[in-house]
Amino acid sequence: MSNLFGAILILFGAVLVCAFRYRILAGLKRFEANNALRRAEEARALFDKYSHYRQTVQFAEEEVEEVAKLMVADERTGQPVTRYVFLGEQFATRKEAEAARYAAIIEKAREFYKDLDRIYLSGRRRPDRPMAAGPGLPKPETRPPRRG
Image 1: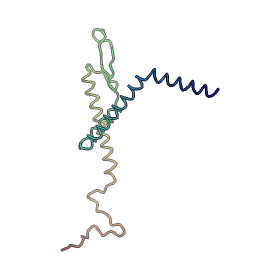
Image 2: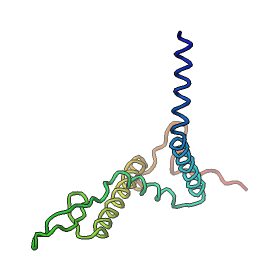
Image 3: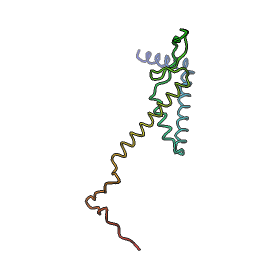
Image 4: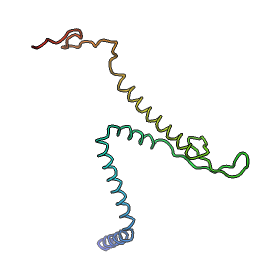
């Protein structure tokens, strides 16, 4: 009896795969296209000295909300008009709203680099302080012997 149930489940699974094969294949093709695009971007990033900045901006863009379209009544006429909202502020045109969004994205990316500077430069010694000699190290004033 359990063999019969197993065979029915396998047959039912095969029918489902056949019924939804176009959807499944379309999803797999999208997945493969996204992977090919990602690999091409990684290959391009190897030779582009500004790729890190581009990736930082893309990462910051993911964190910033999209511009929303809103229908409101006009203050003067009462007629419905389209407004574009970004971070709670209304804009008359999409171009103005997208410019505000882009400025927010760039500011977020700049803050990332400021944080990097704060993290990596805070541990370095300042040029006005001489480097202390540790055990086994010569004093900073001494020079290595000359050869020749």
